[in-house]
Image (cartoon, rainbow, N blue to C red; front, side, top):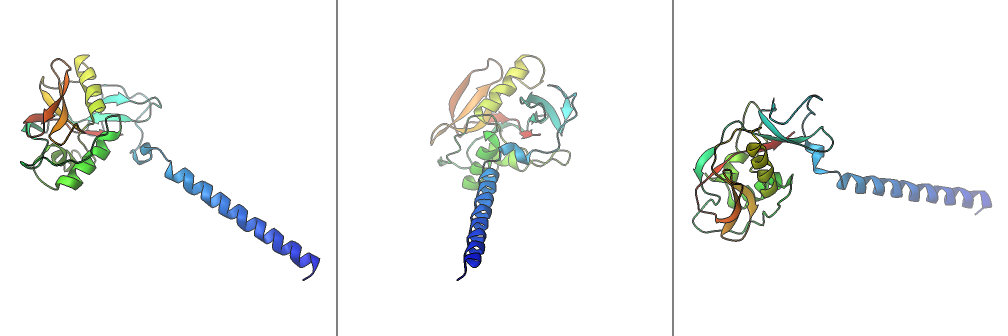
Length: 198
């Protein structure tokens, strides 16, 4: 094999290695995209807390100013259990932070199936053509309460379910009259308000 042939083979091998490295790097980046890559179209620059938008009312705007959370204009239920049946099931829907409610809701519905319970009602909701509503996480629900307490959102003074599971028998709920949150029996009947991401 001539020297020129060896050089061409070596260059070919190097180019293959570089291509593999680039593709691998792109795959890593795509796996680490933030959850916000599924958000719908960004709102106009003038959007504010309390404004009607995207089928509900804006109650949170993130640091980019382009994404946030919307709550439905009316409660979906005033007397509904968190659990789908009389036997409590561990769902592992334990995310508490902003953005986790959507994942919690998917997990709960996947584990508990269809029925008349908090997560399923939100998951099946369609308002003005928007069908990506979900039951808020513990922290999302607290943000909603804060805006309600400040007078920017009008919701009844009631106890509301979050999508955050506390234990096999309990899930987190929040009072919208005094802001207290507590671990509550999943079979209790509380209010629910669906939210969505924009």
